[in-house]
Image (cartoon, rainbow, N blue to C red; front, side, top):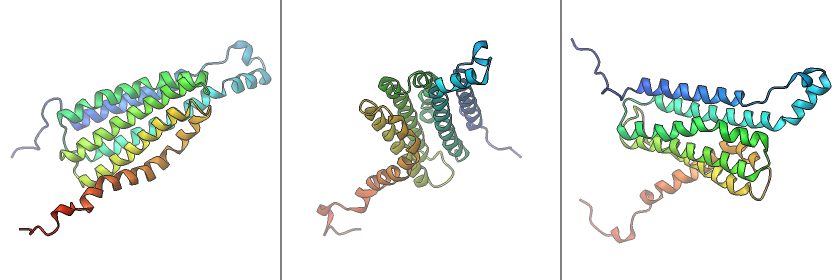
Length: 222
């Protein structure tokens, strides 16, 4: 009696999931490593320490934003991998730019922590997040379009639409950063972009199927 079929070497969903989890864990830890520590003179009194914390409030805000955003991306990827029954070369390859951006995020996070109102720093962070979420959307499109998911592929495509919506929201915020110094506030409502933007994208994608070509009217069907 033969056991379950083993995946092709290099295409184990479990190994890919473990490796991805490790990259996310390292990146989220590096966010805290980038936080500046108080020196001895700043620990001498409560007033001095309070002044230090106030002066570096931008770093703590940047850390919190980046941590929550990374956690949300990891959570969505975790759910996707739980539904993956196998891997393809394209699905595996797209993890390279995806994880590269995950590992890179602590750098733009440190930049906005040092100067959170700097439009270039906000643009770099938003662009990194947008590219990361676009890679996430591509992974979902591949998984749903090539039969890698064990559930309903249409659901995976709908989730891809949510990711496209979030990515476009970050692109929008990158432009707004040059007009409004607090454009980073838009990142806090990114889930709304997934809810409403994703629904709009899904509706636009299914519109051609719901509106047949008028030239086909009157043509007998067999």
